[in-house]
Length: 165
Image 1 (cartoon, rainbow, N blue to C red):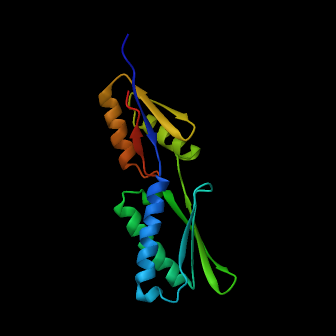
Image 2 (cartoon, one colour):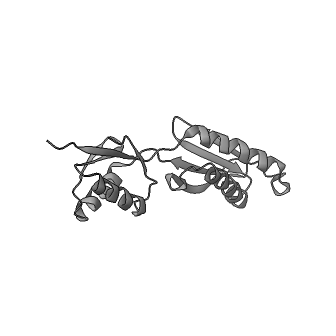
Image 3 (cartoon, rainbow, N blue to C red):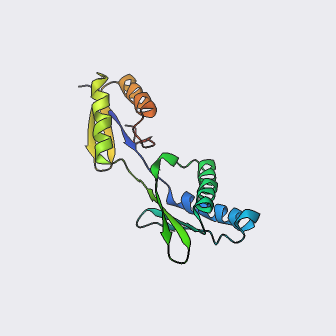
């Protein structure tokens, strides 16, 4: 009987690295001359997996988000997993932007990935398990091809691979 090999395709965001990125970005924002009267702040709600940026106007929010994205990219965080919302006018003549953090592969994206693997006629068995996609096969070569395909596929989430068996 042949041995079955598998891996899990996941999409995870390390919230500790996000917190560190926010601290470094806030330090830079507090030191920059163009942010002196901007009243800019960035907050992380780890339970709701949401970032909230506040500033005086939309331009300052865009600049603060750009600084934060730069800091997160330097730490290797997947920027695809941060969905930007609309800038809202808040009370007190300030603006607010909420950015949701997508942790895990949504079911519709996992179905799309599984369909793409089947359409490529690879000898693999994809199965959706919660917020991850398990891919199994008897051939390690087929799994390598499946990994390459998932890496380059434009599924809207950053994919990492874990639990190689």
